Amino acid sequence: MLEPKKKRSLPEEETDVRYVTTIAPLSCMPYYGTEELIHVPPVLEWVLVQAEVLKRLHSSGRKPLAIDFGGGCGRTAMRLAEKGFDALVIDFAGAQGEAERRKLQDIVDTRNERLSENPANGKIRLFLCDARDVDAKKLKELCEGRKPSIITALNFIHYLKFPDVEKFVKLVSDAGPEVFALSFETHENPKNTVGHSPDDVESIICGRGFEKTVGESKPAATSSGAMKTEIGFCRNFKPKMTRYLKGLFR
Image (cartoon, rainbow, N blue to C red):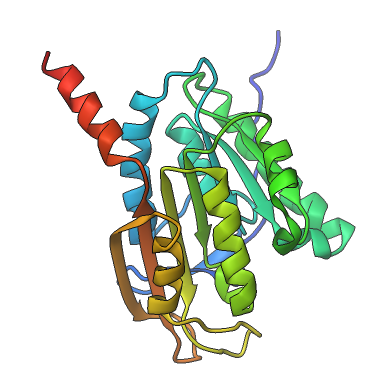
């Protein structure tokens, strides 16, 4: 008689500042560890609501696509996959050693095993590199002919110098998502990050045709005294929503 398949366990918790959230009580989220985000950042809660709508507007035979930059072991991607999106994680851990890359891939494989238990779920795909070196051609190749509906970059752009932020926003804009969400720290801290003004970042993104929908700044849960900013943007989304709602009441 066949024994039931055992679920693989995830590694013990370790701490990384990229998973600091702004929900009270402030809690430093681990880079590895338990499968779920215990305290979901407000901007991710907003993204998940938009994901429900975008999934209903999606007309292609394939599942809609989301991209998560700097997504590590797939915490954010897991949430999006549970909403029915295929989630592509692009993470700069590729610059680290083989053991680090293998550990991340093992965690993503475990998540996909669990996601496969429900056919409505999407799947997570991991691409490890220096995410700052991904250009439009490479991103199009990774998307496999699909246009991403959602792009997230949580706790990511403060690792970039400001000219690279501008390049990154152009890359996101050219990919054509309806929803773009990001969070970042706003001044230099001991983790070798580079701070950015929320107004400057917002101006760049809105200059690409996005409309700010949600946003807030709060003290980050680090000893650096940095502020943590979360912002969500939409583009070409309201007309689609209007058509969808009109269709419901015909």
